[in-house]
Length: 171
Image (cartoon, rainbow, N blue to C red; front, side, top):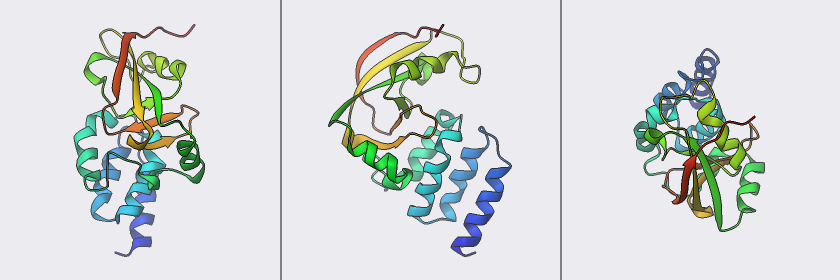
C-alpha cells in the first residue's frame, strides 16, 4: 500500500469514528505511515479525541523516538508553530481534572478554559474537581493546539506543579 492509499483509507476510517474510537485508529496507523505523516495525523485529530488518557501509554509508546519531550512541529499548523515560538521560555499552564488524571497530556494557557473541563458531562467523574496550575518550559511543549480556542498545550513531560485547588463551575 502506498502513502496516498494509506492516508485515504485512514481518512475514510476516521470519518466513521467518534471522539472515543478515533485515537485507537490513529495509533494503529503507526505501522502504515512514516513519522512525519503519523505526527501530522495525530496533530490534526488530537482535539477531536476525548479519551487520550485511556491510551496514554500507547501514545507514549507510539511517539517514543520522536523526541517526545520537545516540540513536535508536525503536530502543529504554521500558525500554531508561530504562536508557540512567541510564548515566553516558561509558561503557566492549567489543567481541570480529577485526582486520577491530574498529570495528563492536555493543558491550557487559559485558567478559565481549564476549569470548565471537570464539569463537562463527557469528562465528569466522581470525586473532587481539581484545577492544577503548573509551569512548563516552552522547549518541553510537544505542541500548541489553537483549533478549539482552548489554547491547548500538549505536554508529554510532567510540568512543575505550582498549586492544586478545587475547580469551580462557571456560572
